Amino acid sequence: MLPYQRLGVNIDHVATLRNARGGTYPEPVRAALQAIAAGADGITAHLREDRRHIRDADMAALKAAISKPLNFEMAATPEMLRIALATAPHACCLVPEKRTEVTTEGGLDVAGQLGTLRPFVGQLRDAGIRVSLFVDPDPAQLRASAEAGANIVELHTGAYAEGKPGELERLISGAALAASLGLEVHAGHGLTYENTPPVSAIPQVVELNIGHFIIGEAVFTGLDVVVRRFRELMDQART
Image (tube, rainbow, N blue to C red):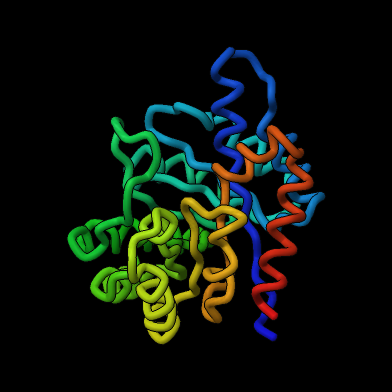
C-alpha cells in the first residue's frame, strides 16, 4: 500500500460564480469548510492579478476560517509577494499568469527565470511559507526548481488530461526525478474522476490539487459527494 495521498480542493470557481452577479453569494469560505468536512486535506485559492475570481478579502477570510492548510496560488510579482507575506498561508504555489488566458496554460519556466525566482522563493521560505513551483514534468524545469530552493513541485497534468500520448509516462518519470532531487511532489490541472487514478497511483505524488471538475460536478451532485468520491478514487489507487 502506498502512503496516504492528500487532496487539495481549489475553490476559485465558487468565487467565479459569485462574481458573475456581484455581491457575496456563494461564499468561497463556505465551500472550503464543506470540502474539508467531506475529506479535503487542504484548500487552494489563486489570487490572480486581475482578481477575476478570488479577491484579497477571500484570502484573508480563508486563512482565518479554515483548520486545514491554505495553498495560495500566485504569480511571482512584488504585489503578490506582499499579500502572501501578510496572509502567511501554509504554502504558496508560484504559477505562470497571463491576463488573456482562461486558465493556467502550462508550467512555470523556472529554468528561464532562475535568477528572479531564487530570491523570491527565499523571501517566502524565510517567512516560514512552504514554496511550490507549478511546472511541466520536464527534467530541466525540475532541476531548476531544486536550484531555486523550492520545497515542492506541482506537476502540470494538463497535457495528460487532454489525452496527449506519452504524458502519463512523463509524469511518472518526472515524479521520480523530482523526488530524487529532494522535492516533494504534487500534481494537478484538468483532473477528473476518469483520469485521476493513474496519477494518484504514482508513488512519489503525495498530493493532488483539483478544482474545476470538483466545482462543476458539485452543481449536479453536491460538493461533499464529489470530494468524497475523489477521496475514494485516490485511496483505491494507492492500494
